[in-house]
Image: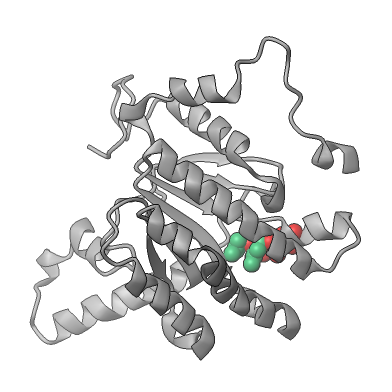
Amino acid sequence: MLEKIWRKKPTSIDEEPFSVRVDKVRKNSVPIHVAIIMDGNGRWAKLRNLPRVAGHHEGMKTVRKVTRFANQLGIGVLTLYAFSTENWKRPRFEVDFLMKLPGEFLTTYLPELIKENVRVEMIGDFSALPLHTRNAIKNAMEATAYNDGLILNFAMNYGSRLELVNMVKEISELAKDDKIDLTDIDECLIESHLMTSHLPEPDLLIRTSGEVRLSNFMLWQLAYSEFVFTDVYWPDFDEEYFLEAIEEFQMRSRRFGSVTDEVNIVRS
Ligand code: IPE
Ligand code: IPE
Ligand code: MG
């Protein structure tokens, strides 16, 4: 077990070098939106006899790596699931630590994000976050608002069920106030009341750490996304694992219920 997790993927003698593989990524079919459930920080730390929070801290470096690489590949949106509406159930010390991470990450890397034309955004229930967390995120969003490169979208205090409940409430209000007819309720209207209304739906979902579940993440938006699960813990995830997921994505045939064999990136 320990070996399996610590060992890097064996590279065979005839495997192409990383840079060649990057060059071979078909630029016209990179996923527009990649969403990642960053999981396994606690187990990464436990393997090393470190406190769980050491795993969260180490995971920040992975966030930096995948952001830079996503930008390099020309991915449009990178959504990172950083804290779920259920994660408040964790010990107070761990929650406090997780709430400080956006501030620490952004203080360290904001100048780089600005330089690299990355726009920081957030989905989730902002109001329940501590003031210092809100300020750090707000500050980064403002500082990068005019960047038009990669959107780095943190899902922070995000829960898909909460999002769906809010959507139902908002649409019900509109119907109650006679602002819409029941016949106006369609997929477009529902999407316009989700926290992701301004974003395309994810083409690719990656979850690290070997868990094969969604944990209340984007239940509506992932309806036709391609899923890639990897055993590697988030702090060990890197450009090479990311590239592997992209290569896997590019081999998939997305049909959206139709019969064509063509690889379609955007839902038709
Ligand atoms: C993911 O790592 C980070 C968050 C959920 C905030 P975990 O903390 O869930 O790590 P494991 O799953 O316990 O190893
Ligand atoms: C999902 O991971 C949430 C985030 C990565 C932020 P969890 O570790 O909280 O999920 P479960 O509890 O294993 O389903
Ligand atoms: Mg976990």
